[in-house]
Length: 167
Image 1 (tube, rainbow, N blue to C red):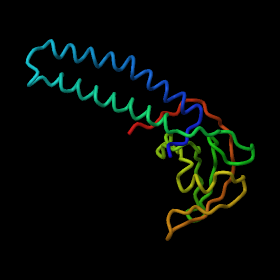
Image 2 (image 1 turned 120 degrees about the horizontal axis):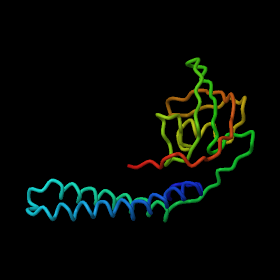
Image 3 (image 1 turned 45 degrees about the vertical axis):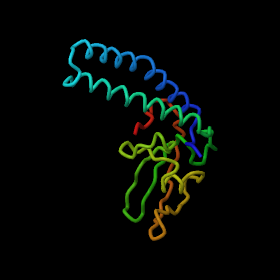
Image 4 (image 1 turned 180 degrees about the vertical axis):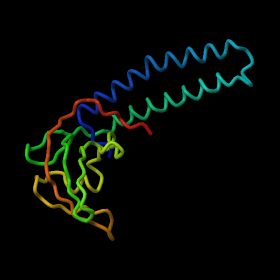
């Protein structure tokens, strides 16, 4: 089973493939051409760096194409009063007496450093489909779980600014 992607995710991936296949590939091929023109390739760092960049770029294109080929397209629409994809959610963690704000996204756009959590994460799984005011249990593993209260839900939609994670 492949990644679950929204239509916007698919558009972004196609844009990245097009960018890497055109502009980036052209720049790399030009760098290779210039490095070859310098002569002796056995000790030519620029040549090896350009070849490495070419391999990385081609690998990324292949990875994205495979992701699209195996993807399942999901809707990012949800009921107005329920937590869904691209909603910004304010959560209260009673165990720590802490309030945090997160945005629920697909797994390829998860970015915990910027409070974007995947719907596949323990918190994402716990809050998805629930309503403001509800307390849900976040199951981390067999031995540990905790409670979290959903304080508010804001339907922020998908503005297209999230980057697709590159591995």
